[in-house]
Length: 179
Image 1 (cartoon, rainbow, N blue to C red):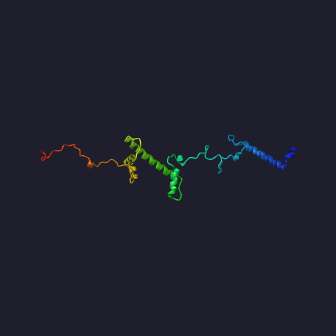
Image 2: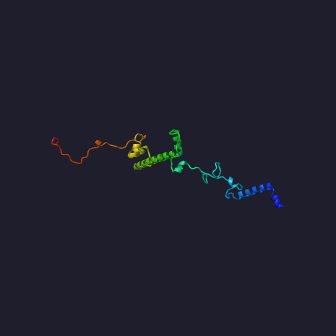
Image 3: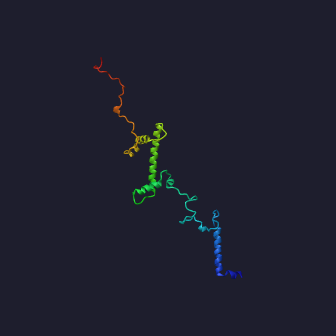
């Protein structure tokens, strides 16, 4: 009787479907709270859907500045470069490179200005310290040669002609001035 019962084509189809469903449920991920969801619907594949896979466990976005190890905002630099209409297309590495150059220049100027502030026994950097830092550095002076720093002042410089002459050697008095 059982053999004839299994020979029914409709019943065979139903049994094979239930066997397939059981095998799919056995292979489901144990640590998910989805319970009875089949494995092929758990996400994490290469699809475009907003599944549970993708950028890692936490799913947090990482900024381009963090990826490049920079403090300067790469996204903002990219936006400014696009607004400038420098070219119809913009490479992905261009704003990263420019942000790195700007960060290096700022770090260099701030380090020299901090040294100038410390030399003047100050804890804050003022425009005067920036001016001293830029003008005492040869390369920065060339780069910022046409730049005026407001409230920066000038470098202390007295021309040699204006300095008093040294009295290192005693001058012989001329006969006309002797009494």
